[in-house]
Amino acid sequence: TLTAGVQQLGRLSLRGAQEVAVHAEAPQATPLKLQQAWVEVPLGAKLDALWGFIKTHLQSKTIVFFSTCKQVKFALEALRHLRPGVPLKGLHGKMKQPKRMAVFREFAA
Picture 1 (cartoon, rainbow, N blue to C red):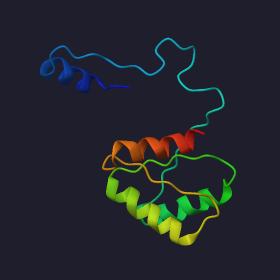
Picture 2: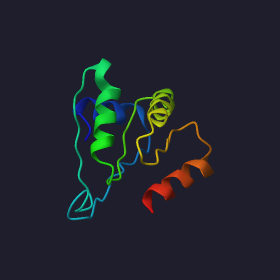
Picture 3: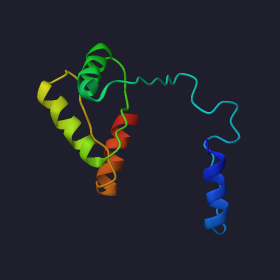
């Protein structure tokens, strides 16, 4: 969803831009079995909250989004050190494409 300001900025600064929509023709935007949720957590409690979530959802596949590659690497190493009992994988933009695709395929399997 784009705000009016972002749409106006796009019209002013982009030439020949195309809008990309996810599942534009589908009756629903996400698969029926997909559950999406978010939680707002104070900065100092984020890793604790994530750890608690992982430990209570060991049978679920979960994707966690971070703002930066550095945050992905830090959280991955911190959580791996705690040994949650499930495999953890990092996926970020500084990875080589073959490695990113391998992580994605493993998650999607």
